[in-house]
Length: 153
Image (spheres, rainbow, N blue to C red):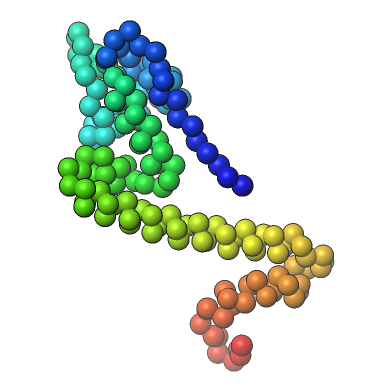
């Protein structure tokens, strides 16, 4: 099953910095305090208008889309900040490679979990623990554990 997330950043505005924090929050389905938190962490830097009110430009909308996409991929906010503020491409690539390695590992674990669930669904035994096919799927887990005294493989 493939899951995709489409982020619409095509918000119509009357000027280069016309969107309020409420409008942006509503557009992305976020609470305003989330945008304020991201700003306090250095992830966002919206322009300020009269009385210090935040005004979000198109570039800010893309930054929010990057943050949301990165969070969906499992990035921590600190890593997102480091990635989007890195002036050194090598630093950014290091963060991305580390995250890619972690994501690859999570995907492999999810595939293994899916195979285990599919194996359990294919079992017609009253007690799944006695199903030879399901036991075969668990062999790696059983063999990876330390052998208890008196037990043999």
